[in-house]
Length: 140
Picture: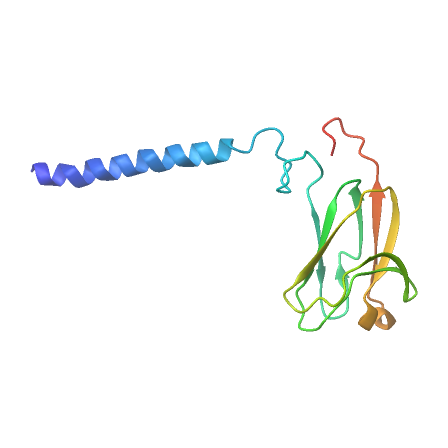
């Protein structure tokens, strides 16, 4: 009969230790954790997907300091190149982004940033990042 109590006690100890560890890990991200992994209180990153011929969403609004991440979910190469009408304005350029890869850029100044995909601009693969001021008291 004592041998049956040992597995129950062991299971109970494992459960208590696991719950304690979960509680510690969830409280480890204190008030300065902004969700973007850098712990500086800045805005969380925004994500734009790339399909075969479009950005999704094509037009986004973010706050100053936000890092935008473009992810290539298609089976073709894309670029994220700043500018309009296929003319690069030298603000940012990802180079070729292979399928399954990503590119990130942090926007540090207010303004509108149009961009396009070099191989697919003629098919309308364009977008705009609009960067606005941080007005929230939390800095977001």
